[in-house]
Length: 200
Image (cartoon, rainbow, N blue to C red; front, side, top):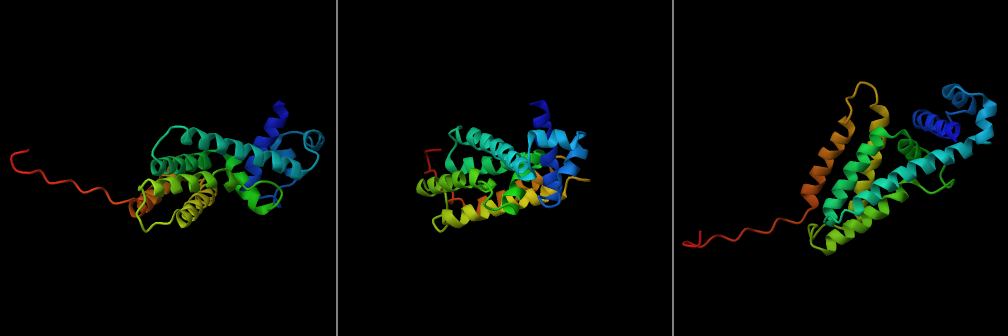
């Protein structure tokens, strides 16, 4: 079991950096420090190992989604929390980045990575709209798509920015972008009623 988990961890880093086509079993064998025979004992083919990495990345992502959505925050606040926590996960977890990449490069080989969190964002934004938390002119559908693009872009930024960038920089960028978006899509604050003379 330890060797299997080690292989998944090493493979996550390799698939994240080099993609599916750029990663071979011989490369994985060298990176893991074990023989090809030991690799194929646990995973008979590269596709099987890639699926295990995707499963690991999706599981880590779902854990974050379930933790955030169980807090009972107002819907728009929950989306904000989810975006930022996903950003942190993307920055630190190679299996999550690999799952995002592999689900594009191996389209149809398994569930897409975005499918394990985008529906939750869409549902939360629909709730936010129904509860008056979104500006009346904001449609939850396009806002969900924009959120998916922001988080998807963070995957690419995290992959390119591993060298020479301080920890937390990528999620910090995502946070700044999300704050800009939120300022534009949130419902205007209710006006404060003036205080009548003598009631102060």
